[in-house]
Image (tube, rainbow, N blue to C red):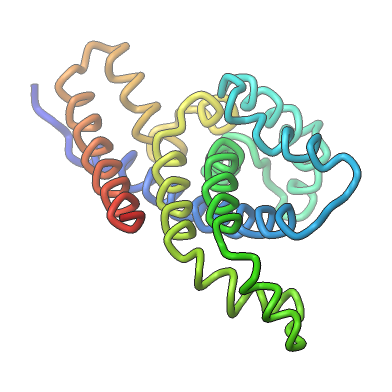
Length: 221
């Protein structure tokens, strides 16, 4: 079988693009959420954290269905997006970014929160005792001391978003050259009997994910 390298590389580049954008967004969101949940006490905190972790246990298609309702043309997010940009949000690569953010958020959140909780509280209290505000404690104590967890959280978020399939195909579809990522491309290739092409995509995503996880493990050790 002759491989069309343009057809091969297009989903790879799009997956990396979605993974890069979504990993930055989910890293910032996960860091902010983890910080707030470690310093704040409020009624219903357990319920909020349970909601944060829900995408981790739900089938991706369920998450994709809920996203489709929210960002579709009749959903409030989708309607607002269409008014602002005169275009629909579903079946665009931005929908793939959103799906990756939601799916990878629990993993990033828990990794970074674990890093925050491992910090000696006496160091943070000592900073507060000499007049440092919460933002100063975060910037000069919490973040530097949890650097390994932050790096691991980012890499795991990137790797998880890179391999997202169920929610992505629900909200972004599988449009070649536009929304077709490596996981969806593999599914279609296998379904069409293009086993060799599917193998190339499998190898590419396995190698990428392997090195990302290797870096994360090296940072932990």
